[in-house]
Image (cartoon, rainbow over the protein chains, first blue to last red):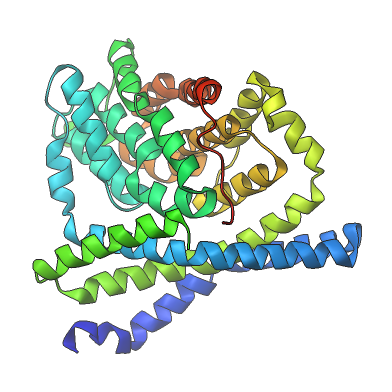
Amino acid sequence: MGHFGFLKDPLWLKTLFKEAFGGGFFGFLIFAVAMGGICYWLRGYDIFYHALIDDLVLISKTLPRVMVAMSVAALVWVMLPRKYVSNLGGRQVGISGLIIAALAGAITPGGPSSAYALLAMLGLSGAERGAMVSYITAWALLGVQRILLWDVPFLGVEFALLRILCCLPLPIIAGLVARRLPFKLVIKAQKKNEVSD
Amino acid sequence: MNIGLIILSVLLIILVVLAVSRSENPGPIVQRAIEQFSKLVPRMFFALIAAGFIAQLIPQELIAQFLGKSAGLQALVVAAAVGLVVPAGPVIAFAIAVVFAKGGASSAALITFISSWTIFATHRILIYELPLLGASFLRLRVASVFFIPFVAGLLALGIGFLTKFGSVILSQ
């Protein structure tokens, strides 16, 4: 029972409600109501009603998938330490370096805050530019968590598989292009370190 | 019950077994799951409802004309352009994708749209990439990836010639 003590914590509950129903949420609610109103006005009651019913049916089918996907994501988040992922990146030469970076990017759990934080760490620990680009591109295109949480529930497994197939070589290609580009690369955090020296 | 739910459930069972075998503390896991759920689901609910209404408001022909199979390569350009200007998270982006799918967009166009959105996500650039990595890295990354959504779409078109695999299944 001690494990679930957080359920009784009033501060946690308050924050939870604030995050669930605060901020942007009202924007979504009002937008949905507005769209419904316009639909009713322009298309009449019948179409409005059918659209609403179709939506609710769609949501009722999508929601279980989202819940399961979120449980998977939560398990991965706790069980896969981020340090392990960042240690994977960066130093190998050649294509294998890009492939490893891409794999690390694909399995990185969490949203952009973790992915970009890890990317910054990769950069600071000396990863070369190709690996960095490959990593973040793989996270964006092939992020397993994102595919499980969004592609599959919203658009179906078949589509998700097709998209994965089409995107497989792309992080590597991006990394190869990045290596060839003549731009000078200075990572922001590095600049700060140099200035303070 | 459909394939997607089955695959996800199997994955969940595997991970739960793994967690139990490692004697993981269930507290943080459940906590994290509830937190993520509460952040996403209320918005997702209304985003999908809005998407359903919008799908009725936009003439189907418009979506099919610009993003459907008949539009061919042009669909990829339109899809990439739209993906570029969606400065929002996955809730909105995938709700838009659902609207497009309902309207008859081709799988290749959808793939281009999602790839374009996920690679260029302007809000992410402003909130994370610039502060953490800086303009220099951003320049390098954009130069390395700007063609990616098209390549993804072209690959999808190519695969589309060989097989009908990969169509969107909205509700099964």
